[in-house]
Image (tube, rainbow, N blue to C red; front, side, top):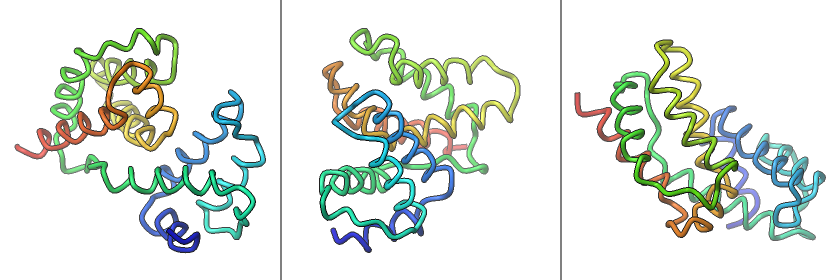
Length: 172
């Protein structure tokens, strides 16, 4: 995919929160030294997803990572305000119960799963929206894909479970 076509996906198909989740993921990977991503790479990703001109010619692996994120965007079904949020959360929580994530204990993956459990327990609609929004935006993370593989799961498992929960939330 050409760089301009790829940038259009980020600037035209993604909302500001989704773009923020993408570049924050790169900053988190830079902070952890993950995949040899440096802070300058994360800064370039931030500029790129926000429509600024960036020359990635010397770092085509970053473009490859961004292409993977763009493909994942098309795989994810997003919760709408017209969907039943409680059914989404209950369904997702039930689907997540069977995931053995011991290999990812204390990781970002574990945090995502815990957030859905917390969302189930809260009575605040606003907090539920925040937890669900965070969960869905984090599905774009490359780190989550790798953590799932570390736990011997398909890298798109959480997207699949999310999509089942979204489907259930629409059946009302």
